[in-house]
Length: 96
Image (cartoon, rainbow, N blue to C red):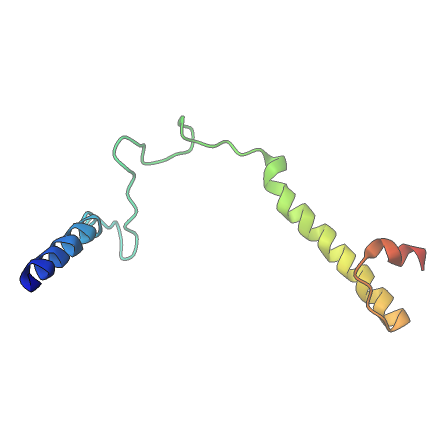
């Protein structure tokens, strides 16, 4: 019984390890540059049907939100230096 459980555990481990053996890393263009396109996909994405064609407005949303956050933080710090008390809510700062 014990050998059967051991054999089943070894078999299950071998089945789980099979996907890890699929890539052997031998098709590297340079040391550490081993990226390959999946079968059926083009080598370069730009200009193909797989190109996501990102909207510049969508790409700039994060940088705009970071700028707004920095402005709010600047107002908070300036108010804290003047009053000696930190206020998180920026709408309350404009009334002071």
